[in-house]
Image (cartoon, rainbow, N blue to C red):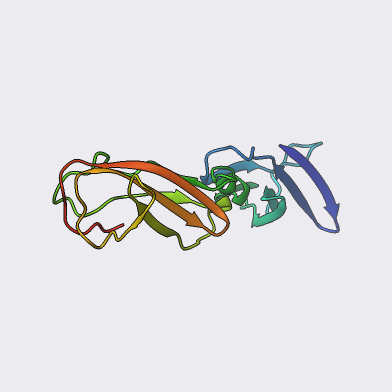
Length: 173
């Protein structure tokens, strides 16, 4: 914490800069204190107290006045830092394995989770192939066997294998 006291005409301005680590838990913070004259330790009433904190590299200030006893309470909310949220996003395209695999008869839904760099929304194209490499219509019933699926998002492509245990009806992706 950095403290700076500036004497201006008939009142004092107290500036406090809080350094909150970027990985700190976010939420409500409360800063309390008493402002006194340095030589006499007398409380300073109606003194402006400014708290400045960095949020995503940008200074954010909150201001409050002391009461007659020189006391102040300043409550602020620290928002989620954007760089923290972005740090959890992958910087590459990815596809998780199909679920369920093996694919049971009558299940009707094959689940695929995929992501794009930075979490930007993008439509995916899904195709299924038999073991001979022929494209199959996933809306038609599939016989028991091994199938390959391909997921294409923009220029990125992933292929993987899925096993259909028993013939099933249409597959929704």
